[in-house]
Length: 391
Image 1 (tube, rainbow, N blue to C red):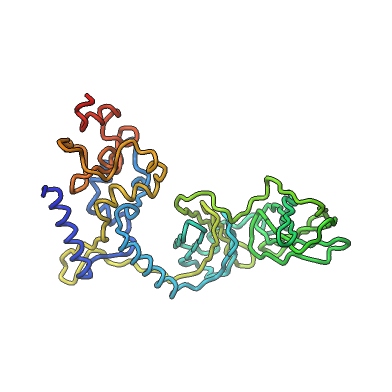
Image 2: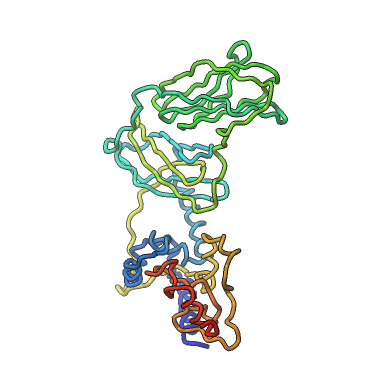
């Protein structure tokens, strides 16, 4: 067994024993804690031209936290936040831009934002909510919203005949459609979620009829506006390009959130949540957390608390496919295999502890000054390092 393999096994045993002893901290450690021991790794990579995106974003746990540690941490976060959260508002309809208004302590506090999306899971984020008087007022709270782009984008013949109506407002507002054949004696029901792009489906309408309708929107300050009357026919089914459901998923990459609070009317907070995928959003207040001591004990000696790290195969192969799925089908070189009989792998080509080829045998883990983070300046030089017959 090689020296490298012995070191890895030794470190793995140390971490396992530390976990059994209760010394492993499974909470999301801050980046500063990682840099306490790994500052030289960060500084060396920071000067390179091509930096691996998760490393650049300081997402250490994305690659290095073990699945067991991740599952335990998420369960603990769910248990802890579920017990302590005072939920304030929820928008259940998926959208990439969500607006929520709520009343909270005007002196601020810690706000928990929870976003759920189909195929992208849950993203929970705590943000510091400033005092209400310190926030920029939300533009438009002092006037009714403006309605434009009112369209019937779809008439569909399914089990029931339905019509989809869309419109835009220049500020977040509610959605309602009033409709009928001779008079506007029916309505779609109020959608109380605040949004700038409105989609309402009315069902149970009759075929071969001419319908009249108006749309209504009410702002967060309670100002209501009604559109002019429009018409549509159910003589035939159709669908325009604008008929896009806000709940559709647009990809499978990581769910990202951006939150921005404003000061609303009537002593309310307004929060805009922008997401990379359509999500339902809930917000609530949680108790402020006090800073906890890190790496200290009663005796005064330092105790290193470390996450349970991923195994060699996961860090060097498996985790790569979570972002680079397309390369799994078009790889030009086998991965997770042993070298051919008689082949000698140079020391500068990292392998797994047992000698298997990994993604990082050719690509630098964190950063490189070479394109594609290669460990050699060109493909030929890279290949002949192992395949001497190609020289």
